[in-house]
Length: 400
Image (cartoon, rainbow, N blue to C red; front, side, top):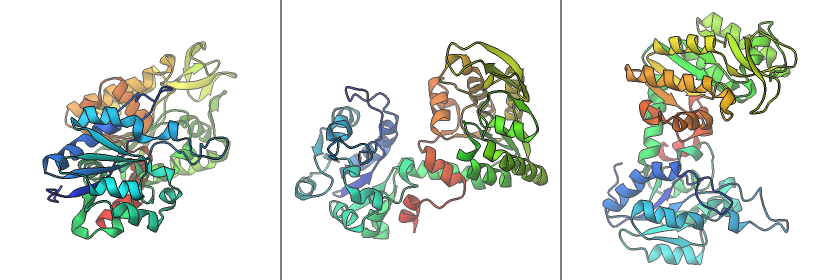
């Protein structure tokens, strides 16, 4: 970070969209923890903080009378924990913009912290409204965007607001900078072989990513429910496994494109299959291209784990996006765990590994392996779009 923050009021966009339980207690503060280095740097540099974030989708989950459910979506739930994390009493403003926000921001002293109310309580936020953004901009001297998780949204607080600050009065925070740097390293400066692991339920969710990956990787490992659409494209029998019938032709064309470009696609040779989608289902191991009637593939099998681990062991750069099975159920978690361990093992030998996407991140965190991979991204959708080659509005707003 290059700006001198001494004596400056810093308007900063973070991603504090954290999960809360029924009593509005934070159940996972990872996103808050990730923002701490930037927040503390600004305070130590002599600045004061005016923090903006969204929480949930309050406009889509209103009360029956059409009013915003303030009790459920207010950022006031985060004040106590943020105070503990920063070691500074955090003041809370019950509005994002308005007379109260203007007054509280104006009275903010060096080293003090003000948390504004949920940006999405204002309709202008998701519309990227310029008037709303200008009112936010008026609260601070400089603008910092440290919310990579929302960088793919052209919202008022992530994108529009930046236009009201001079080029030398706006910049990325440390988290945003690290996200962009690591993604660009993978895209443009990767050592070979480069292997992408793509999992999850549906091919349709990952079309853009798969098409982009085939242009520049050496290997693609496919797992999760989406693998069975590819199996069907190759003429396999998949039982009751999840298959997107309308995407079989697409899977066929992706396989052909990969072959033409010399990219090796690895599908799971075998699968852990179940007689129902449930934690207590009966299970057995079958070839992925010959699954019995009435049975469905819910995880990769032992042969697939061994093959995938071997490919990863030989890789110098690894991208992982999406689980290998229904890892939330213990009976179908072994495949994802094996991949996580293989990625960590390869990293320990010098490979660069980037884990992006909510479920993959959850898996490495669950296994306490997040410190054993090179970088864990906080931005699921944003990272996906960045790797697809799209220009993210939150990044463009700072870089120009």
